Length: 166
Image 1 (cartoon, rainbow, N blue to C red):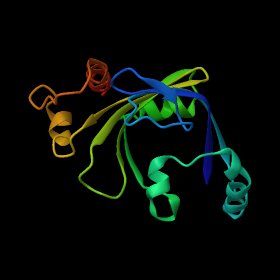
Image 2 (image 1 turned 90 degrees about the vertical axis):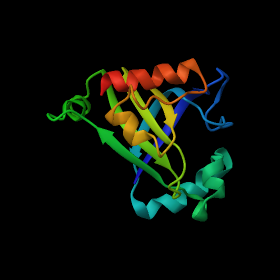
Image 3 (image 1 turned 135 degrees about the horizontal axis):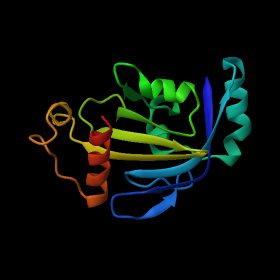
């Protein structure tokens, strides 16, 4: 199991409001900036560690509602035919990015997030735009013809950045 820790995490939703991630989740944040530390934890220690840290952490609302206090995140990572984004990550380049399409939960009717996750030295910056699930395949195949409407110009810029990097 990989555990990650976010330090000084901040998020901004489409209306520009900011808030601390984890302390109080925003309705649908589209921009995150954080420092991330990841740890390999043997499976046999996860319950004990979870019990130990429980007084100091708060479940996000989706986990609190989910069965077994969990929920599903499905991610599809996009890359070039030569796997250039993967190799940038393996080579630990100081400025790199990942492109991914992500869904949250088991239901198949929720929105799809298209994301650019950048690492600039030690800071993680993630931007995303939400697409209606029935529209997202067309958006990736022909972004001009299937252009969705976004609730903010900031989210529209994030979508355009995702398309530019594809």
